[in-house]
Image (tube, rainbow, N blue to C red; front, side):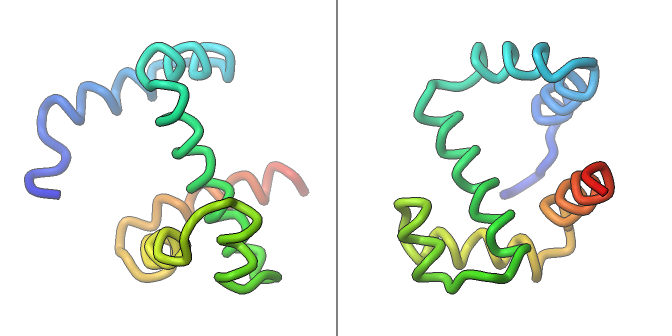
Length: 99
């Protein structure tokens, strides 16, 4: 994406970061996104978690998540190859919280 984050993206990031509770974030996301957009984000997050676990193949993940292997591949590229490491940071954080 060109010029990411721009001032509007930064404003959204700051808005999300300002929220204190899961309920506040849930309410904000429900206002911001359509139900299908929210479900798609949640599905990508689920795919990232399954890839992180490493127990299922791409085809198995696609079947479980009712998506294409192209989507699974795209999520994996961001999970493993891109320098942003956003998925990894969140998954590692949740992993430490669970232990």
